[in-house]
Length: 227
Image (tube, rainbow, N blue to C red; front, side, top):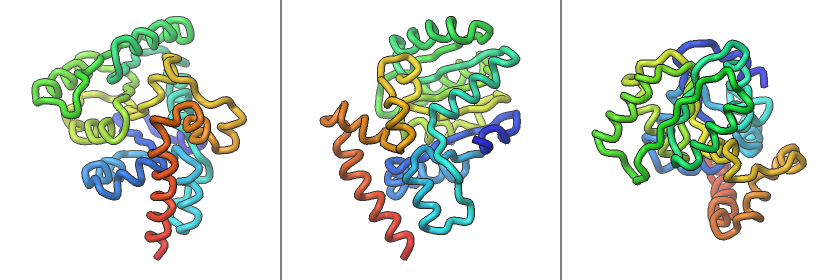
């Protein structure tokens, strides 16, 4: 986790990438640009680490760093000195559970939450309201959770309008994990890089296409890249 420990202070956009994100980026130019031009891109998946080794990439990550690991390290770092943390995304019901858990686990952190409208695309008025809320909060740490690729594209497209000086992480499912509305895989599954299988078993109707079709597509994309 040395990659996370070495991230400097200041306005920094941190994204994560997994096999699903890689697949989506092949046909979504703005999403690909958002991933490539953020300040840090964290490998959230053993498949990404393995693919980098297979392709002999110039920059090869030594380990998988889940979005949850990023979240935990950043929260602990802020908690050591105190400050304000903002959660932008998800529903008010999920955000309420997050605020409740924060009050217990991080009593010296001031939480700010914002639930944007639930729609495929935001209007100019929606975007202006979100930006104004973030700037008014002026957080010491900002989390954006609207699922990929929406969250990454939104943060990248409006990065210059955010008048903040802190780390910003796009973490998606971490909101639900922390709120307890979605259960993360037990440690054994995590250690053996099988979180995807755990989620598939628990939610086959929702996850079969992403993992069975998506993982096959990812392997094919990496093989094409190797050629």
